[in-house]
Image 1 (tube, chains in turn cyan, red):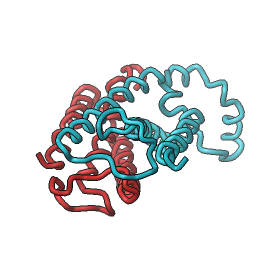
Image 2: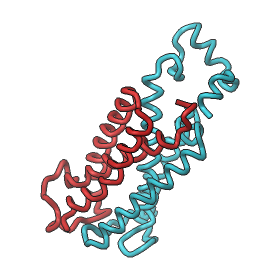
Image 3: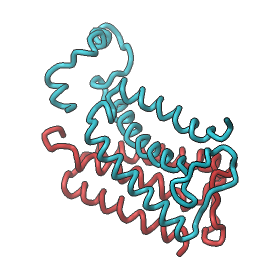
Amino acid sequence: MTSSVYLIGLLIPAVCMGLLDRRFGLALWRAPRRTLLVLALGIGYFLLWDLAAIAAGHYGMGQSTLMTGIMLAPELPLEELVFVTFLCYFTLVMWGLLARLGSGPRGPRGPRGPRDSARRSAPSAPSATTLEEER
Amino acid sequence: MSYAALAGLFLIGPVLTTALALMLRRPSRRWWLLTGGTIAVLLVMTVLFDSLMIAVDLFRFEESLLLGWRIGLAPVEDLAWPLAAGLLLPSLWLLLTPERER
């Protein structure tokens, strides 16, 4: 059971990011194809970096019992692929969150009086202009 | 090759991608602020969680190839990762965003 601590420790916050993404339309829920393409390129790049560092002898697996032991390559545990995916998705979600926080009335920022709650009452029916923008 | 040299080598891709996005898309001041903010968050998260991951021995470094400067337990070279992520992903996103959407 302890052998999946690291994996679960990555997956739980990843699900939380997914919920934020879905709620605020940040990445996958904003432009799914673009997100998947950017993630694939980022994940590929960081895995290449990992493989180069392992080949050059810069790092290797520790003796921690918190990993599943499933290996993708010598010194490259399954968790590293999940970590790299997490890092890339985190970057896109964080950028989107900061953009939402800084975007003023366009972003859903919580109830701010009657005008805002009126806007929030129909979140599933964005205007045509919003759709055009977000597609 | 030192770990710093390898990190420098792998920073070239993200820096060039950002330069390409800069030339082709002329991002606004807002884009730079958001990208800088994202990098700042990534740097803080890296120092915290890299230290935690090293503390529980998820991975080990070849000490002789490190500069030896650490922030928490994180070797300073590892900060190349959040920097690379914070440059590469927003730049790719910008490059792949259709012109009419911007």
